[in-house]
Length: 81
Image (tube, rainbow, N blue to C red; front, side, top):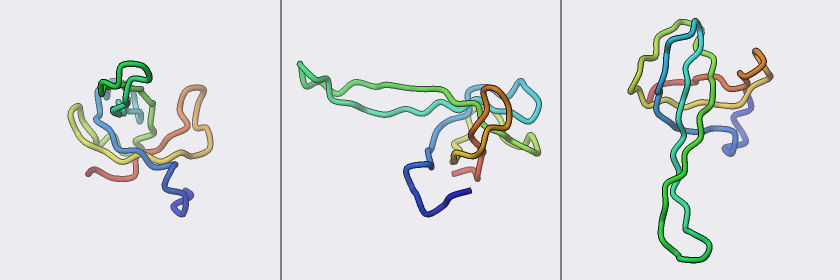
């Protein structure tokens, strides 16, 4: 876990906890539209490793990038915010 590079840490909401030791985290960000200037919401989902299955839907969590755990999982849940 590389804690000296804050660009590898994201905060998002758990939207799915169906899989074993995995949660799906949605990261929301606000972006200014390039032409019209209106602020719009963009989101992206990441699969994150949750070793103890302790995080549930709706939890706000902090995730960090790690080495790949599986084909789609290269993030790990650090803590609940």
